[in-house]
Length: 302
Image (tube, rainbow, N blue to C red; front, side, top):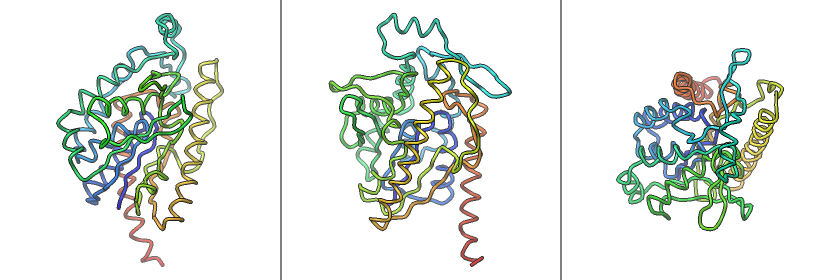
């Protein structure tokens, strides 16, 4: 049984799309399981349908307004790099409405229903492939994996949206009497879950470089500090997920093929730049192609 697993990573999901395009269209890999966390959850359904061009067009066309119904930050250029600063008016307005978070991502919820149709949902639910998204149950302090086979169209779209909600910058969602948020807070790259569900080979796309290639710029205020802190936490969770995934693979005689980003794509994955994301998609495709060529040449060198 083969599984494609895609980590969280915000706008860097465009890189994952490029890698997946090469694996599916060029190598003709057929996966039984598709697992995604956060931005990965936005990709897996269309990849399972093999509608790569459709998801590419969607992914490389979004901007801040596509995601946020109330964006809590403004984007500034600092030393040639996109940085975020607090939008005091929007944050104050959100708190006055009784929200628990700085911003809201209800536009993303609408976008998911617009681009992932009920007909596509039924096609997947009735088929042999299983699509799973990761969410964090903050009320019970547990990670939950939501399979398309267990829910209605509306509920599954909700779980995909919830998987992407990077609080406190995006929406905190109450569903089934529990509070939920981004799946990355619990399982950034669900390799372990893929193997537990029977995967004997996993292609894991990690939206982070394999080694630390940079030092974060000093925070200029509380908002920047909070952003850096959460990014640090997510990096540590991802590292632990990879370590546990490797251990689980060893125990179950499974194999894992990792696809890390070869370079630093961005230090702020909450910034959605169309031109930039299109370039990352191309980088992902070319990287997967090069990696496959290198892999095939290794036996010859030995």
